[in-house]
Each structure stands twice: as C-alpha cells, then as structure tokens.
Length: 326
Ligand code: ADE
Ligand code: ZN
View (tube, rainbow, N blue to C red):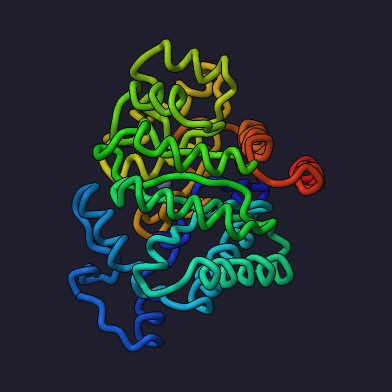
C-alpha cells in the first residue's frame, strides 16, 4: 500500500503515542502510570467506548513537556511518511496538555518542532487542528478557543471537538466555535459516531463546520446523506476505529461505500492508531482488501481529502502534484 500517496485528516496526537512511547515518556518524567492502562501483551487496555476515553485520558498524562509533544508528533509523522503519507493533519488537545501541567504555548511549540523536523527528515507536511473535548464541557472549550485565537500560528489550521458525543449538546459549544470561526479558522466536529444521523444534522445546523469527524451514522437517514452531498460537507471516516469500538461488527457492515456512493466526499483515517491496532497505511490497505476499492479509487480519496484539508492553497497545489505524479 506504499504506492498510493496518502492524506490523513483525523488523528488525535495524544492517541497516536503507543504503549512503548507512553512508557518511555512516563519514565523520562518520573511518573508511574497505573498498570491497568496496559494489557498483558502491552497494548492499551479498554473494553468499551467510555473505557477507551478514560484510558486515553490517563495515558496522555505521560505527555508532559514540549519535548514530549515534539517526540510524539515526530514519531507519528515519520511513521505516516514511511507508509506513503504526503500530508497529515493531527489534532491536539490543550486540555490534556494542561492536565499534565503544560501551557498552550509550550504544547504548541513542541508540536511545531515535531512538524518541522518530520518535514525536514521525511518530506511529509504536517498541520495542526486544535481541539476541545466535549466531555470536559463548554467552559473549557471556550478557554481553548481563546487560546487558539490569542496565540495564532500558521501551522494551526483549524479547530475541532472530540470526546463523548453523548454528553452536552452542540449548542453548548456554539460560542467556542463561533469565536474561532470569526477569527478565520475552519472547523470540524465529531458527530454521527456514538449518536445517530440526527447528531450530524444538529452539528450542521448549529456549528460553523465544513467537515465532520466520523459522521458515518448519517447513513441512518437519507435526508442527512443528501444534505452532506448537497452542502459538500467532507466526512473524515475512520473504518477500523468504528469496527474496534463496536459501532459496526465488521468491515462488511461499515457504510464507507454507502457514503461514497451517495456522492459525499470522504477520507480514510486512523483516529487513534495504537488503540485500534491500525495506521494510515492499514486503512488504505483495508479499503483495498475489505471495502473493494481499487488503487484509482484510493488516489481519488487522497485527492478528495486534500481538497477538504485546512492547509494553505500554495501547499495544497504542491501536494496535489505529489499525489498525481505518483
Ligand atoms: N478522542 C479520541 N478519539 C476519539 C473518538 N474516536 N471519538 C471521540 N473522541 C475521541
Ligand atoms: Zn476522533
């Protein structure tokens, strides 16, 4: 799956560090992580979605310094580049950084260094979407929005929200999204993952978003499917994440092709690679072997992802050339 140039739009940085790196950072920072975070064969331990979020929140506490954020970013981008990725948008969570004692500026400085080092060494272009966390609530979300607007950086190309979709409403986060959108940053939001098609509709009605993280459950309502196509909303689809968290029992049941056939722009993404035993390369490979896509379809998916990316226009056209040249 090396041959097709890949574009990733949906990967959580704190969820991109595997058990080995998390243990290494914990040791470097002299902290002891609960052994319950890991399985006997050294994977992250979680049983269901709330359990996943909780393990993720705890493991990310090992990422405590700007150097740690640099190392996590660099390791992830380098791995993506080795698998043929040309452009990667990562999401970071200043709330997780703050809980580990790190300022917004320090977390950003580390990520920027990781992006620069990865481009220098591996030629991959990385950019950052700063996210708030739904289950941390609207007040913290507004603080993140303030930080994003207060310390603009050319690599911070968007704003988003992850976390538990079953708490709070989109309306609660409208002020935070409006704040960054008014400042000129494009937005994306997780919806239609743990809640149904109505959540996708509600996100589009309420928030200034051009993309939706997941959005797969839009297939449960044909009006929502039609709306996504009509309004050219891009879906950042994460097939293996959806299978591993149990939204779909297997790849055959995954609606990736239903979304594509409805004329919706979709990309392939890894979400939290070590948690779901995946990588961006594996997502493309699975799309070929399990979802029936040909290489030409995969190249088109990379082009569609790049068209929906929050990168500046100059880099977009350089990257498009790189995808087409291959
Ligand atoms: N944060 C990290 N991964 C997530 C996911 N799949 N859904 C919601 N929030 C997340
Ligand atoms: Zn996600």
